[in-house]
Length: 139
Image 1 (cartoon, helix red, strand yellow):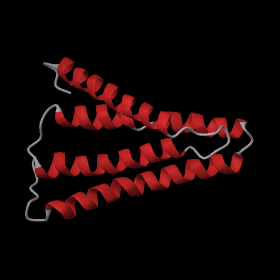
Image 2 (spheres, helix red, strand yellow):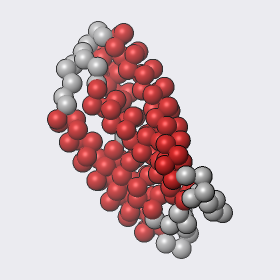
Image 3 (cartoon, rainbow, N blue to C red):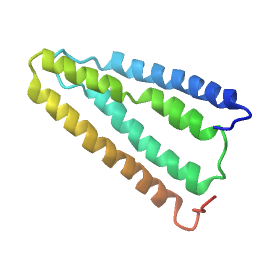
Image 4 (cartoon, rainbow, N blue to C red):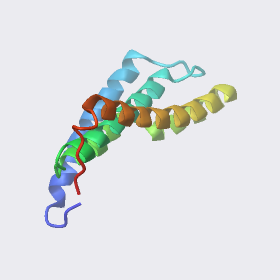
């Protein structure tokens, strides 16, 4: 964060976070989860967010000249607000309280593995789509 104007960065993170959080809330409302059911909405949001973050990082770091507010707005703000790994843990706790330990463990493990795979897939797919000659490294 730049020492001279940190408020601009904080403002775009806040604005992006509000947008991402509202989008996540909308998904949760459309796809509610039963107390002992697998939380597909949160799982899907986290996987989709990781896929998009992987693609964004390639675009922001390898294709475009770095923009000071792009990554804070989209990466930290929008996608950080959209994904919800803290709520993921609370949902797993709720599953344990509902005596669905198997579902809780499957949820925790699947989210960790699939989220990392999704981030890698987002990076690899974006690199493939832009083509190797379109990429340029920036310092």
